[in-house]
Amino acid sequence: MADLKEKKDSGYQFMQEKIKQKPIYQNRMVRRCAASLLCGVLFALAALAVWALVYPRLNDQSEEQELQPIEIPEEEEEEEPEESTVYITETVSMELEDYKKMYQQLIQIGNQAEKSLVNISVLSVDTDWFDETFINRSTASGILIGDNGLELLILTGYEAVRAGESLQATFFDQTTAPAVLKNYNKNTDLAMISVNLSDVSDSTREVIQYANLGSSKTTRSGEPVIAVGNPAGVYGSVLFGNLTSVTQTAGIYDGSYTVLTTDMARSDASSGVLVDWDGKIVGVIQNRCEVNGQKNMIQAYGISDIKEEIEHLSNSQDLVYMGIIGGDVTTTISEQEDIPIGVYVSEVAMDSPAMAGGIQPGDIITSMSGQQVTNLKDVRSILLKCSNGQNIQVVCQRPDRTGYQELEVTVQLTILE
Image 1 (cartoon, helix red, strand yellow):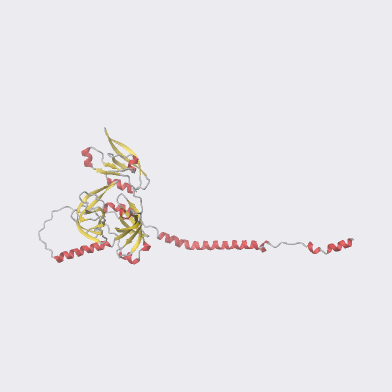
Image 2: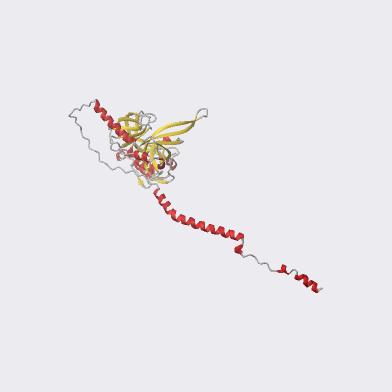
């Protein structure tokens, strides 16, 4: 019996063999994970190598494409020429041919100035009484100020472009490019629009010119000027005339600007520039009736007074406002009326920063941000250095029964919307 059991057990000895596991490196799942990990490492090393080689070049290109600020040179102070009596001792007669040559020369000056002008087409969507939509088209004239390395910058009127759904610029050679509103100042009705340089062909860039800004400080009443751009309400129109006044001012919030008046009739859509006989721009045509008795005549901001603002608009800097209308208290007025020298506040705009800060009509502003204020020009210069939301300290002299009392208020500046 024992032999039989021993024989039976010996028949199943093959089942008693020890089974060994495969090495871990031969496991299919492990090998797949290892292959994936190796591919990831190789991909990371390749990406690092590409980044190390390409990044310096990309960085150099980005540095080349950085915006270049627009700088408008300050005008040099020129001595006023001494007025002398002119005696005409010889009579000069002009034939018809002489007049023809003179006007041909004037037209050439106008054509040269037009190379720096742009016709801006403004498209806007509106609805009629029956809620039917329609496209409204209008045009305005713009001035090529310069480029910042990426864009062409064009000065124009804010009211003319503010409602535009799309803007299109047409250059001197009749080529077109899309434009966008870049910056504006509702206070002076000036705006800056931009056109990508990539949208302007090389041939167009060879033809156009940047505006040759002159000086309005040296202009005199009676001097001849040329109005180009859109002075008659049609782009490309040219008018010849004379300056009738160069001493009028436009009272706006926080400042005043010299207004050049002419004897040239205006239209409701007049825009463009005034050019002297040297081809330099001395004024930017505006449609606000700033001077009494000149409603139907072309008027223009003196270019010297708006150069700083043009530079700010070009560089997308804030143009803040305080909201006062006033006049200068000069030394003569101060001695005659026994009031402090500064800026007399005649009006404070509703809901303006000045009103919120506590400035009242009748106050005389003598200091802002620690800087002395003697005229509206000082107020404008100080505000040009400020930014939206900034708080400034304003020192005023307020009249009472005993004379004037000094008070200091805080004004938080904003942008006029």
